[in-house]
Amino acid sequence: MRGMSPYIVQVQGNHVIIKRHDGKPCNPSWRVLQRLKDYAVGADSTCVEVFPANENLVDEINARHLWVVPEQSVPCLKRRR
Image (cartoon, rainbow, N blue to C red; front, side):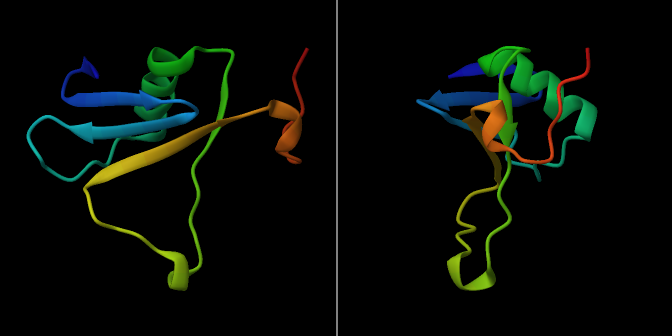
């Protein structure tokens, strides 16, 4: 578990869990979420956040969940050169 105030970042394999130290809602801006991702798994890593169908929703802790995926598995991404 690593911290980047006010957030706690946990990495479990390809799963990145981001939550706050103080238990408040975890609502980082896109830029902060990008920095947390870079901090946790590196700037060259591609992560996704999943918004499941309601029937598959699990919302038990106040956290954000990212998954590291191969860039080529995300069809809308094209590397800028």
